[in-house]
Amino acid sequence: MYHQQRQQFDELLPALAEVIHSLHRRGIYFRSLHQGNILQLPEGGFGLINFLDIRFKRDR
Image (cartoon, rainbow, N blue to C red; front, side, top):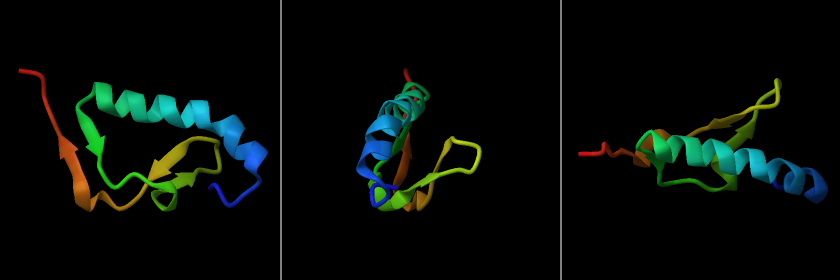
């Protein structure tokens, strides 16, 4: 995603941060999060790949 135009990446960054924040609020931690594991979907959302290092944490 970053390898596309830098300006487009900068414009998408707040929406991506909201997706990650939403996952964290649900107790989902994607510990292998890096640019190679983030896909921009055709409809404009985001997808994450490589779930080998995902962790789930629930509030007690």
